[in-house]
Length: 193
Picture 1 (cartoon, rainbow, N blue to C red):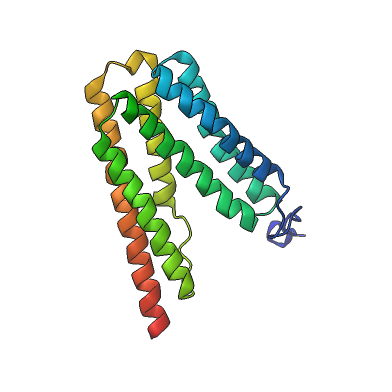
Picture 2 (cartoon, rainbow, N blue to C red; picture 1 turned 90 degrees about the horizontal axis):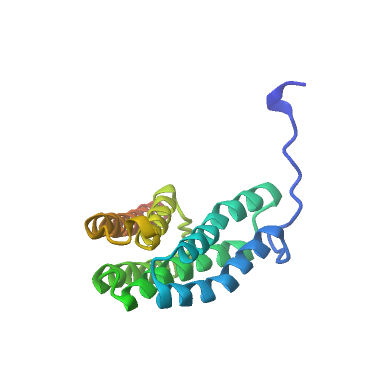
């Protein structure tokens, strides 16, 4: 039997499953996000907060790997981006409350997430699916790194570095939103032809 004729790995869970290992990890990330964000707002850049931050953000890749291995689910497709948004925006808001980052980049990122959620919802009503793309995954990764750099004790006073990384995250946030709008426009044009 040739390598190309090897049967695909059987999926352990169907698309409607809820109790999956990937969803368990995503749920744990949601549960532990709140005390971590409160700790960030209270203490700012400490070894504890940066370790907790990177533990929570690193689970994003792990639950994605589990979902691809065992079978993606509708509940996971909803919960994983929700956990990302709560963690990332929560991290930026906690830092802004402390005065460690400006409110303007936080407002831009928050507005982008709200806009994209509404845009995807309206597109879905027209039968257009706009799943996350690679650019959006890079955006989330850079946002997580930006929060981590502000929390990392050796870079806690490196304001120029922090500002540059936060604005790079904002730029990717805007560009990825424009890419989603472009994809929706292309899909709508294809649908009407």
